[in-house]
Length: 384
Image (cartoon, rainbow, N blue to C red; front, top):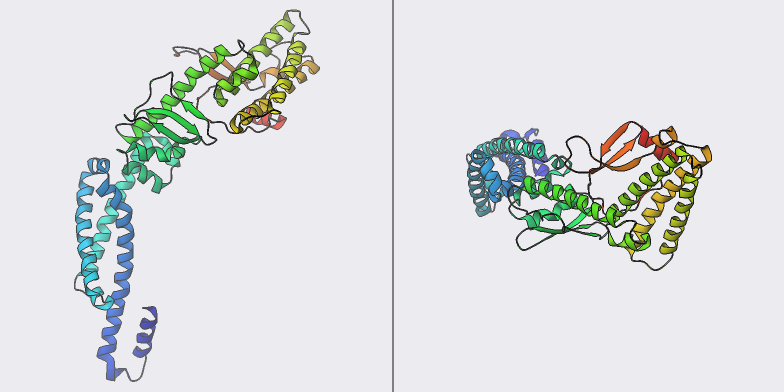
């Protein structure tokens, strides 16, 4: 097309134009129309393909945006008639110069722009209701919303809203039975009620996240109660990696503060004795990881070794520095995990403390991802 347009422009500049002016002018006009129609056709087709799945295939969008859905149906019918007419002609120049075609395309483009604006406002409203949608790519978000009444399709995008989740196991009635992490760890919903994937997509995804947190909170109570009754090297394999690590951090905080209380009460070796016990427990974990283990079990033990190495180093440093009270800065500045009841809580929850700051543990499912080594710089970052 561009080559032919250049040829016609050359003819328009020719000194012999008078002889063929009518034909050359007609070709210039017709080729210009072909170019304009192709440009508008590409623009309309792009917008139409982008919006068709939502305005034609999504019952939720039809319900939320009835006026725009009706507008798009009219555009859809008109566009298909337009395409059919072009396809029957089999000649680009003749098809592009059909009277009224360019006006029709411009009209469709303007109406599609209105539909796009309404859709953008609709997506923004969904994001305000379920903020995690802000971090989902637009194409994926459209797929999630357009398949809102098909939870088996929506859960295929679970990783977009729950970073550690690779797969969601649904029952026949649409209830969530388990979550599978990126590493292959399976978290079964077995203590708390199983959430059902029904209703509006943003509502049941919010229920899924809340139910996962409730299940983790309930399983933590079980893991915490079980801790200390059994040998640790057996106990840790019966609980999710995140809960095993959290329980050991709770136990470390409690044991260290108990030892510091005893030091303050007149038992100067209490913290050193606990530090020696930490070394023994750490040696046991190292012995476990030197044996045959499944990949997920090995990763879990390695993460525990990483965190407990830091815990041992903290206590060893406090022993060396002669720390005698839980109120000393050497201990206050550490990231500590405790179970506590705050105002408004019905039951104990897990809280994170560092210096004078405190945060509720969110119980966001983390799977069985490996942990980075905690360095003195990490400790300073936590304080900051």
